[in-house]
Length: 386
Image (cartoon, rainbow, N blue to C red):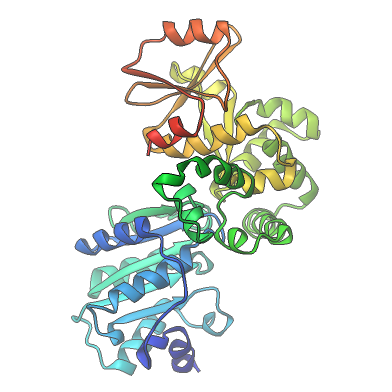
C-alpha cells in the first residue's frame, strides 16, 4: 500500500530522526543556501558518492525548523512505488497529512532518473503547487531534459568523493597542529584509497570492484543498450591507465578494434556517469576540439583498483585537478612539452610529486604569460590551494 511505503521512507513522521551518518558540511551549507529560491535542486554525482546520505542529513537539519509532516522523501527506484506517478505520490502524501496545495512542502526524490516523464511531471507540479523540490540522479544521461521542460527552473549541485579533510573525518583521525608532520603519511593513504565514503569506512576491495561493475552495467551498458560489454570494460581499463595523461580516441579505437565513433560515444557515456573528467588543450577552438584530451578519474581509489597503486605523480595530479576544476583549466602542449594546467583566470600550474621540472619544461613554463605561476610539488603546495 502506498501510504505504508511512504511512512517507511519517512520515519520522522512518527519518531525522532537521528541518522548515524557523518556530516559533509560543505554540501549541507550549499543545500541550506538553496532554500532561498524556488529552483528545483538537482543533486548529482558518481554512484555511492554519498548523495542519499547528504539528503538524509539535510532532512535532519530541516527538521529543526520545519514540522516533520511537511517533508517528503521517496526513492524512485523502489519497486513498491513504480506503479505510481510522482503526482499520485504527492497527492497521496498531501491527503494523508491534510496539507493544502498552497502550503509549502519540501519534497526529496532520490534517483529520479528511473522515472520516464520526471521532467514533465516536475514542471507541472512546480508551476501549480508550492513545492521545493530536491532530486538526485547518478548519471547525466538519466537527467537529460530533452524537451526542456525545466529550463530556467533548476540548480545543480554535484557531489564529489571525499576530499582529504573529509577522508580524515571519516577515518576519525584528528591531526593536531603540533603533529602536522603526520599529514604526509595520511595523505599517502588517501592517495591509495581515494574518497568513496563506504570504501573509506570498510576498505573492502570487493566493494569498489562491485561499484564499478554496477556503474558500467547499469548506467552505460544497460541504459544505452550496448551489446558488446567487453569493449566497454576494456576501454575503461585503458582510460584508467592513461589518468593524468593525454589520450587519443582514434588510437584507442584501433587498439580495441572498433570504430572511432563507437569510442567517442563510450567516452561520453563514461563522462555522463561521472567516472571520468577531461581537460582540453589550450588554444584555438580547433585545437581544443581536435587535440587529445587529458583524462582524470572521478576517484583515485577506483583508478588504483584497476592499475595498482603506482605512478604517484599521476595520482597527485588527479587529486589537484579537483581543487581547480571549477576554474576551467586547459593544458598546454608545445613542441612535445606539456604544462599541466592554465586556468580561466590565467593561473599556471605544473604538478609534480616530490619532483622538479626538467629544463625544457622550465623554459616553457617561464615563457607562458600568466597572472600567477605555481609549481605544485608537495602536500604543502597542495594544501595552499584550499
